[in-house]
Length: 160
Image (cartoon, rainbow, N blue to C red):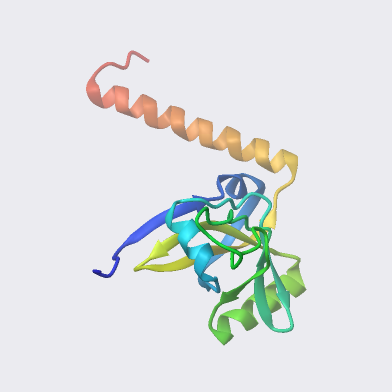
């Protein structure tokens, strides 16, 4: 069987970019069992309510829902079990320091296959207040309106 190449997104957490201000992102491997990988290959996973924690110098992903594999037997996995993330020691130390000192959170943004291996894009993020969310939405809408007007002007249809 030929080796898979490229990046294939399994699940993404679109709500995270709305609820948090993303400061930095990291790519981490995920420790999985066989039936989890088979379920992910079917494109089934949910990052809703998932987060990462630091325990004893290691980083764990909690709340990630990978449904049981349909053809699995008694060896099937628990859907919401805690999964270990694989990062370099230096990255782990940096993340531990930043989450301890400044109250930042570790939030998964997406889960994907990269060259046949399951990876998670982990973000170092700061929670947004309600007024920050409204401000971000207003800013995005204003940018969208500017782009729309510029597009019309380029086509010669704008009558300002």
